Structures are given as C-alpha cells and as structure tokens.
Amino acid sequence: MPVAPVTTDPVLVWYRNDLRVHHHQPLAGAMASGHPVSAVYFLCERQWDSHDVAPLRRWYVLESLRELGEALAKLGVPLTVVDAGDFAAVPDLLKQIIQKQRIAAIYTGREYPLNEMTRDRAVAAVAADCGVPVTGYDHSVLVPPRALVTGQGTPYTVFTPYRRSWEKWLASSPPELGVTPRRIKGASSLDFNSEVIDRALNRLNIAEALCQQWQPGERAARKQLSRFAQSALGRYRQDRDFPDLAGTSLLSAALSAGTVSVAECWHLAQPAIHDPKQRDGAECWISELAWRDFYRQIMANYPKLAWGAPFRDDTRMIRWSHDKSLFQAWCEGRTGYPLVDAAQRQLLQTGWMHNRLRMVSAMFLSKHLFIDWRWGERFFMQHLMDGDFAANNGGWQWSSSTGTDAAPYFRVFSPIRQSQRFDPEGHFIRRYIPELAALDGRSIHEPWKVAQKVSDYPAPIVDHIGVKDRVSEAFRAARDILES
Ligand SMILES: Cc1cc2nc3c(=O)[nH]c(=O)nc-3n(C[C@H](O)[C@H](O)[C@H](O)COP(=O)(O)OP(=O)(O)OC[C@H]3O[C@@H](n4cnc5c(N)ncnc54)[C@H](O)[C@@H]3O)c2cc1C
Image (cartoon, rainbow, N blue to C red):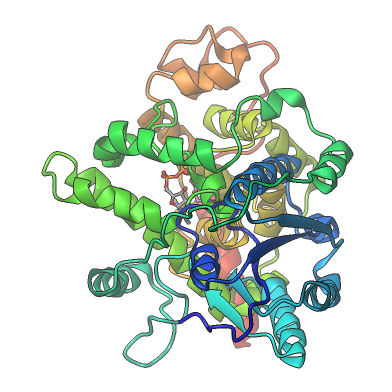
C-alpha cells in the first residue's frame, strides 16, 4: 500500500526500466497522493558499459525516455534526467534532490538483478535518514519474485509446477493496471529539457540503418501490442516457431524497457482465452510471460547467477573451449550451417533474433563448438535491443544445459533438422544469406552436399556427427571431478 505523505511537499516518481505513463503503478500512486508530483531518471552509462548493454538498446531507452519526458510534461509532471554515471552515485544524488525539492515520499518500481538491489538498499538507507518513505511496486512482473514457493518453502526451479502455481495466483489476484494518468489539477503543460539525452545520443556510435528498423517509445509499443492481439495472437502456437512468419509479438524490447506494461499484455490477452478460436494461441503466449516471470524470480533468488556461475553446481567444472577463431566465425554467421548463420546475421543486422533461432544458435555455440556459454551470453547482450539479464542468462543456461530446468545435456539440436523443420523452404535463410539464394528448398539446408561449390559460403566448421558423445563425455568428466 502506498505510504501517505504527511506534508504538502512534492512526491517523487523514480523511473527505471518502466518508461511509460500508462499502467504505471508508481506514477498512479504518486498522482493519487494529492501532492505535486515530479519525476527523475538516473542515466548510468558506465553501468551500461559494465552490463554490456547494446548500443541499439541504449538508443531505444534514450529515445523512449525523451517521449516519456514529453508525455509527463503534458501531465504537469517535470522529469529530470540526471547524468549519474553509475549506480554508486545514485544515493547521494537522490539525497540532494530530496533536500533541494523537499521531497516527501518516493514511488518506484522494484528491480531484481543484484547490482540494482544493492543500489536500492543504499538508497533506502539514505531515504530513511532523510525521513522519506519509499514505496516499491512489483509492476515489471505479473507475480512478485518471492510470492510463490514450493511445498518445502523453497523457490521454484522447475518451470511446469511454477507455472501451475503462477496461474492459480493470477486467477485469484489479477495484476493491477494502475489508473490512466490525467493532468494534475491546476498544473500547466511544461517543457521537457532533453539536453542530457541528446548528449548521450551523440556519444552513441550506432548505424542509422539499425535504428530505422525500430520505433522506440510507449506509443509505438502499445500500438504493437494491440496489433499483435488483433492479428497474430490466435495463431501464436502454430506460427511462433517459424522465423519467416510474423508470428510473435516483437514486444521484448518494450517489455524489458517497460514502454509497455506486462499487466496490460496479460489483460489484453484475456478475452482471447474465452474465444475458442483464439484460446490456444493466447494460452501459449501467456505461458511465455510466465517464462519471463520464472527467470526473474530465479535471478532474484539466486544472486550467484550475476557472478557468472552456472545454476547447476555439477556443471561448474566443465572445461569449455575458448577458441577465439571458432567463436568469431559464430559471431559473424560463418559457421557453414545456414540456419545458425542466418540467425547470427539477423542479430547483427536488426538487433533482434527470433526465439527458435536463439535456442538453435546458443545450443550450437555451447554444444557443437563447446564454447563457454558466457561468451555467447555476453555477445547477445552486446547486440540485442531487448537484452535482459534474466531472460538472456536463463536462455543461455537452458541451451547449454547448465541452468534451472535446462535442456538435458544429451539433447543437442541438429542445426540441419531444425532448419528443415522451421524454415522448410529456406525463405528465412535466403533473406540473410544471399550467397545461398540460388539453392532450392531442399539443398539450402546442407549446401555442402550440392555438386557445384557455392561461392563465398564456408564449409561447416564442425561436424554434427559425434557432438552428442563429446558433450556427454565432457559433462560426465566434470561430474567425476566434483565427486572425486
Ligand atoms: C539464448 C536465449 C537468449 C535470450 N535472450 C533474451 C533477452 O536478452 N531478452 C529477452 O527479452 N528475451 C530473451 N530470450 C527469450 C526470447 O527469445 C525472447 O523474449 C523473444 O524471442 C522475444 O520475441 P517476442 O517479443 O516476439 O516474443 P513473444 O514470443 O511474443 O513472447 C512475448 C514475451 O514473452 C517474453 N518471453 C518470451 N519467451 C521468453 C523466454 N524464453 N524467456 C523469458 N521471456 C520470454 C518476452 O518478454 C517476450 O517479448 C532469450 C532466449 C534464448 C533462448
């Protein structure tokens, strides 16, 4: 419950990865307080550097922040963007704001990665010193990370029982939306000062062609959500695994920067659950939102993940390869396996990769090349517009069989079979690998079998046959070391 301030001094909304005005619980809470409201965002570029945040994601956040500042200004809420550098500077800077503006209360969304939680503990101490209450909201998830526990009182580490419990929770307490904001009574429209944002954008070294493919901001994100709900949601289960189709929502960047509310996503999918034609698709999509919450609660409950540790202790001693030239070939989409290469090139050319391909590509790096999954995790973060620690770490640990509820180590996707199943005609491959454009739908999956050599396209850098045995042996050897 929001804590009611006892003076008429202003209250402060502290924005993080929740860059929107609609369905924003801290903003709604602050506006309901009856006090003047102001907002702040601490720009922490050095933190972005240490978290490997991709240039495209920085651009997305900065442009979304600009739109947010303008939207808040129309509501009569001034947003100050403070160039903080890194999280360590935030407590002192916040203290200065509290004292200068005589802030009576702070409203904010909770974040769960380790560095963010450390920052928030320091801020809570400063606010307590100043006698300012801080109200936190779990509005970046549908179910708060520590709300669900197993019969033994421990966090869930297996997805299926987690999802069952998650669905029960939501059936009895559907996520709150937060009221639609209205201009504060008597407040006039303000001008938003975007100087800090402009300077940060100028420091970014990013190809224009990359940004032109995307639209940042809350307006575009909400439009994308309603377009998806009206067109593709009902067919989501059938279409979502085919990278050549527009079968998924493309909302991951919006969800991770918070330009759209996950509660709004959930509510918008509810009518489809009651429509027999759409139910299957809607249930499947909501299950993906459950995966999102699942990995967030894993991250919140197991801080060792933030130190690069595998979730499964018995995989700690695996001797991963650190072969730089094989890694480079994977990064650049030159492995000789068309689907893997098309996936990597999609990432480099668009800053996004289809989920099926993330699994195929991550498994190829960690199983076929047996390269340390942390290298791949980092490379993804450095390029993804939707780079999100919990989902990315969860996906990489799933693919490399080191994580919670991961693929068993003896499960190795065949990059050829995956290609034949999920891009049967090779349309997706042709889009990203023009060198293979002339091949027909059968031979495009295995170009090395074609009699005439395909110019400019490499031969496979590793043989698929034998991978399973090599991986099984390495996992067994790691376990033996621990047991000896
Ligand atoms: C190796 C690997 C790395 C990944 N890295 C990221 C990442 O950095 N950021 C990220 O948001 N997702 C990541 N994912 C999950 C997933 O691939 C993307 O969320 C999805 O492809 C985004 O496309 P979409 O918005 O169209 O998703 P949709 O299929 O429309 O799904 C809706 C939303 O559910 C969430 N979601 C879907 N699948 C997953 C999943 N498996 N785990 C967690 N959340 C999920 C996302 O927020 C997504 O936007 C990763 C998966 C793998 C296997």
